[in-house]
Image (cartoon, rainbow over all chains, first blue to last red; front, side):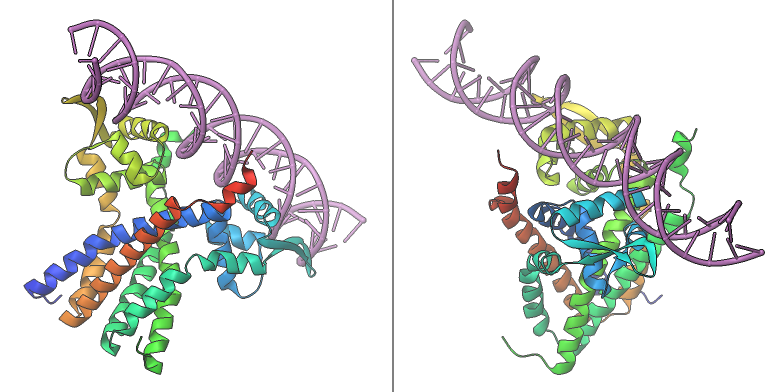
Length: 167
Length: 167
DNA sequence: CTCATTATCTGAGCGAGTAAGATAAATCTC
DNA sequence: GAGATTTATCTTACTCGCTCAGATAATGAG
């Protein structure tokens, strides 16, 4: 690995210092948006997942993506349906499956809370050149991929903390 | 606002598309790390806050930073203390206050789960030039600040969803 | 048709949160 | 400096969302 210049090393340290802060701020914003919508944070993650999915997801797929049990997902769908954010329909090809489709309201209302941030991010990025934009994109993509990979490793590896409460 | 080049506009769109994914992956990783440590996600946020604070924080300061009630914080400290991650001590100058100090274990163990990501991020950033690093730093700082500002606005503005469950 | 499998739902119990009030220390007022 | 007020934390009662385990019902293989 090439040793970075001192100035570069300082910049890198600053970035690494800010990352957890950004994560914390993001988590908190999510909590508040969920409260605004009158749903839990998991419910909001569900709406995000559905908004990106292009088409309905089954209850089981949602349980998998959100890392929740099917029991939790059943009641999550109940809540979101009661609030008018999603609709439940039986899969015509497999009537055991519950297909969950986000409603207009469930797609538009959560997104509206992030409009301001999206606009300001666009303003900022518009002043960047091509090299800068590529750097940001590379960094964001790498961070997402790395967090995802790390999460998968943690999920699949046996958890030593479980030993304490094992029966 | 200067209209960005078409290629730049595409890069910006990609970045904006990835941001929620990065946030989601981060949230999930946090949940899993907390589970590994045998504590709740809020407890882990508390350890993060203490690790960055240089010195102990009072229960009230923690309640404020984590946006939790003092009652929730009391039990959070109980849990973290029982697990050996923090120590509670009375403030000698004001014996009402409970000063919370993170232990060696409470500082080191959570951080160890992020070592891998930190190293890989450093590797990636070491290949960036000065302009690229500044761009990433600016973007990360702006995102953190914007999320923080937005969260404060949401927190302080009256919540229309409360109307529904008003008595 | 029967049996094993798959997908979702239901019920019991638990952990972490809020709201409201109790407790105790600090501070203000005279 | 005694009494009243404020401040910081803790306690109690209750709520909500989660997991675990098991019920229900549709599918598919033989």
